[in-house]
Length: 279
Image 1 (tube, helix red, strand yellow):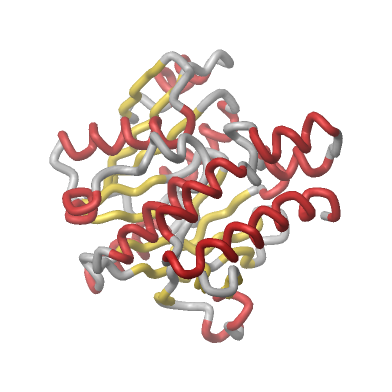
Image 2: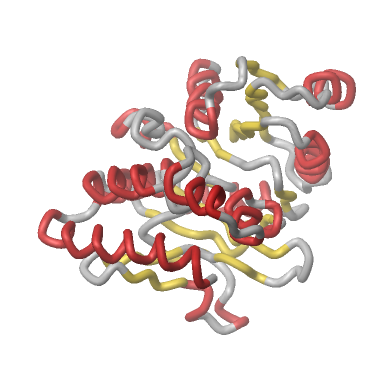
């Protein structure tokens, strides 16, 4: 059985629609674990009344994404999980999402597998995995290289986000949980998948497992839409800032090959500072 860990903080309407989309799935062989990190909008009551089958773990509101996910993963592993999936609450899954996941899980039982992200508004593919070149600090977006006919099956990547990320138990046994000390909110998923890749685990994005996201709802997107000195500071230094320089530095020192670190850091700093101003 796949144990699905969903970290939440408020925004109960998203959590509800996410769980309902899982319920509509053609395969119900999963266990959902919601980690509620101190929600104050009635999330706990909604979960108790409308989703009694969902296991809910609670905290006081100081975990952020990574520690919340780790809490759920630890609980799932204690329950005997062989596979854990991390899933954000502000998305919905396609009806055959779990079914497709099981299909490729059977063929690649030791691989870490991500999902194809669809734009919930346009219903068009939006993200399908990345291949990073540390030497030049460039990223190839796999989706952009594929014709419509080839947007199926598994495609190899070098990093994956945490939304819809399937992780076999042996990965945790070898590399541990997500690094919540270095990456409390952002980059923990990319760090984890790079670490898995270095330790011999294959990474794939499954174009058959589709989930639907709302790009405009991301905190970083909203931060960029309303530009100000305060938001610029938050972008670079806040724990939820998409361009957080501290986290980027830690990610680089941990994952970038040493000969490429100076250029990767300098180029990355410039992109985060200038990119906010021009985009």
